[in-house]
Length: 477
Image 1 (tube, helix red, strand yellow):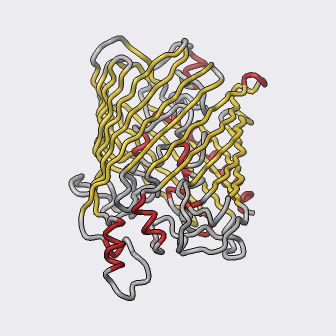
Image 2 (cartoon, rainbow, N blue to C red):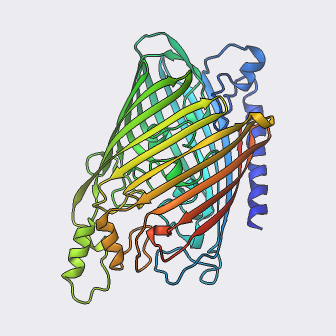
Image 3 (cartoon, rainbow, N blue to C red):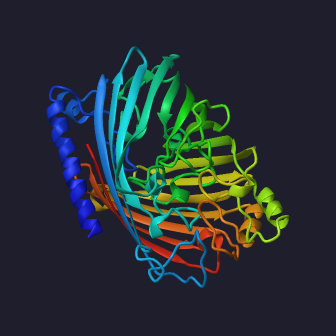
C-alpha cells in the first residue's frame, strides 16, 4: 500500500508540474535533461529542435521527483540498544523504509556573469524503525532529510553565482539539474563566487559515476566520502560562501559553510563565526589513453559546539551511578575536527567508468554527519550500449567504514551517538556492497532495482548481516 500510494502521488505530482510548466514556458526554453552516468546534454529540449548549436539560457525551469522504497531482512540480533536497527518482532515498521522528494529548479540571469537559483522542495519519508539510526553508512541518501509524515515543504537552495572570466577560450556548460548552472558559454579560465543557501556536496566531493543518490548509488558511504564532515542542517543544506577557480586542467575550490549551533539540529550559525566547516579542494582533470578522468584532494576542518568521546568517558568514570557515558551531557565548549579525502574517477571507455574514494577524520568528537572516521570505497558503472539500452546503467560499489578508537571505547561502555549505539559492541569495520540496475522506461523516467548487503552494521560483529532490497523511481523535466 505504501508503494502504490507513493507511486500514484509521484505520477500525479510530476504530471501536474509538467502540464503547468508546458503552459507557463510556452515561448521560453526548457533546460537539458540529466541522465545517470552519461555525457552532459549540451542543449535544452526546445533548443535541440530549433538549433543544433549549444545555446545560452536566459532562465530555466526544471523539476525532479524521486521515490525510493527499501525492504530489509530480519537479521541476527541477540541484543539491541536505543539506537539499534530493529527487526519486525520489535517494531511494526522495522523492515520498511521509503522516501519521496520533488524539487523545482528555477534560475535566471541577473547581470553579466551573475545568476540566481531557487529550489523549493517537498519531502516525505521514514527510515527503518522510525529513526535514522543503526548504521555507519545509511542505505538511502535521501533519508538525510529526516522523517516527515505527512509532507513537508521547504526552501532547499537560494544562492547567487557570479562568474568572472579570465580568458583561455570558451566552453559550454550543460545546465543540467545536477550541475546547478544555467546552460551557456563561459571562459575556460574563470573565478566563480557562490553565496547563499546551498548543499555542501553541490560543490565538493563530486564524481561523475557516484555522487547523486537520486539516480546513482544510494548508500552514503558509496556516493560520498563517508568521513567528510560536511556542513548540513537536518535536511542536508547549509549557508555560506564558496569560491571556485578554473585554470586549464585544474580547479581549486574553497568555502566556509555554516554548521548547526547544536549538533545535528536544524538551526544554522548564520554568522559563520562559531559553528562552521572550512574546506578546500583541488581537482586535476586528465586523459589516460584518450579517456577522461579526474582526481580530487579535499581538506576540511569543523569548528562547532561538540563533545569529545574522551570527555564523555572521563565524566562517566568520575560520576558514581552513571549508567553509561553520554555525549550530550559532556558538551562544554567548541571543538575542532579535521580530516581529508581523495576522490578519483576514470573512464575506461565510453560505456565503462571507475571511481574510488578514501576519506579520514580524527574521530575525537561527536559526529555532525555520519559515524565514520575513515572509509575506503570504489566501484564501476557500465552503460547499456552493448545490449542496445544506452540510457540504462549497471553500478557495482563497495565501502569499508571504520571509527576511531575513542569512539569504539565509548560505545563498548554503553554510550550512544546521535546515530548508533547497541548498548554493547564487538568491533569490526562495517562493510557495504551495493549493486543497481537503472532502466529508462520512458523519456527521462528511470526505474532502478537496488540491492545492498551491510555486514557488521554499526561496527558490531554480533549483529547482521543486513540485506536491503530497493526500488527507485526517478523522473525529470
